Image (cartoon, rainbow, N blue to C red; front, top):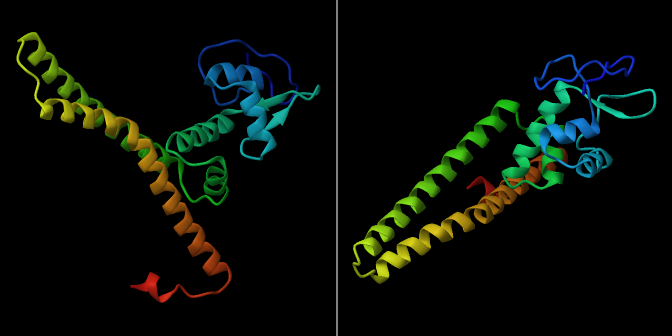
Length: 186
């Protein structure tokens, strides 16, 4: 359901997104798959606030809000905490294009890992169909492919934290007028 941003009156129901339409929180939640509670929490912590509200106080979101929500969800999927996301978006440290590029790179990596796992499963399946004995190497290769699928998010999150801490350290050093330590200059 869309609403007129000025009057708060209902405009139309459509499946397409247009730039001059506004959504109430429940409608945007349905559109994005998030819960109303999550969206209200994001508003409460200052991460994602509506552009307007109706005369009766209902939150109204526009297409720009939807774009910001995409950025938030993408960064969250990439392993950043809500505080890190808030800092990144508030300081314009990352552009929408960079976010989409990061998301594309992550999907490509996931596809690569899934392809490797599929190849290992196919190999083991062929051996089983042919009643050939499975070697320890067959099992360890399969387990390694499965393990990488589960370990990758943990490794990404750790790298993200390390990078964000480095950025924060640089920012704090600059704000306090402190030069980087000798170790950092090496």
